Image (cartoon, rainbow, N blue to C red; front, side, top):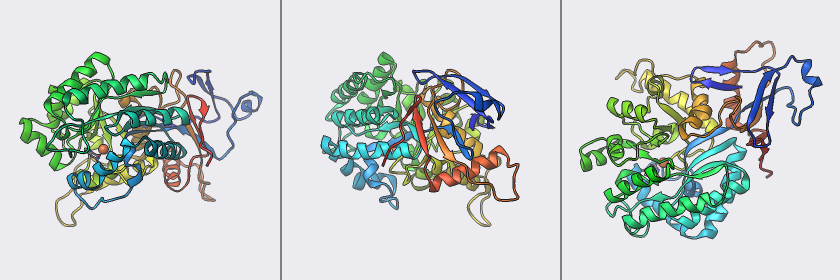
Length: 426
Ligand code: GUN
Ligand code: FE
């Protein structure tokens, strides 16, 4: 089962997928149920199981792993200063980083997350420990050392000391990660968000992106506070300010982006950037629901993100379910007898699943997310909930809904990245 587009879910019956030694899919074809017995293959799936593309998490803060589900009653700015920055600062200790990241990466794989776009901390060493944990456990990843140096929005004990050092450490971290020589783990340029960065750092990272062609991620227009703070500083929206610094590029991953204007959305589509939609985190911090349906219909690249730990669940399956839920709330409105919702705002489970797989892969420029010749074989196999007796002939979409709901309670049986079995044994 895979989604080949936001509205296209397909189940290939009795499929044979051929994968080469590099993990690239060379053929996908449907055999008759009887022909299948004749074919010699390395892995034969049991009846009652379903193969799906592995999940792509387009936004996760690795050093926030120890505080999943903490402090979500606070507004974003206080949550950052009171809980998050003190925790992230502790990742100056590489021993702590190794312990946390070697716990987190296998846990994410066991939930079916085969690719992650990570925010690390400001620390170059701990960032390399994270990249190394991904290589060791076999996860596909983009790993970003966080740049943050603005004295007004970051504490003295947790920031880059100045712009020159912020840009140099980001460049150095790119070299560190490239030197691992992994085809699956790559760097990503990561100004945390505009409020945390000085103009010099933003401009320097824009130049670094142009020089290296390494893609960019940041937070954009998340919450009234962030959107307002950027507007106050520059007199333009977050999106336009990022564009001015050369940070809005092909495959730039903008986390949240809940408060975009129509012009912002047009510009994002024009340059090939896109949004990491974090429906669960947005329910706490973003002061709005991201109108996924409208932006996807307009051609924007959109993936799903957990935003650990602003989002309290590391499961992409849970984000898929929640993305559908919040879209319904946007559609219907949330105030009984009060303001009504927005027309045509609700999304289907298929659209949410597409964001979690192919949509996220295309956003971050990863060659995965769908079972097609030329894509890499990152996949999970799940038990399909047994049909209720007397009910058969379920549509593909109903089968997907049931699988997603069951993945919220149980884990995939097996997980592959690049054709390699990376199922954690724990
Ligand atoms: N904006 C800047 N930093 C963060 C963060 O760590 N989490 C979230 N949700 N938003 C941010
Ligand atoms: Fe975030």
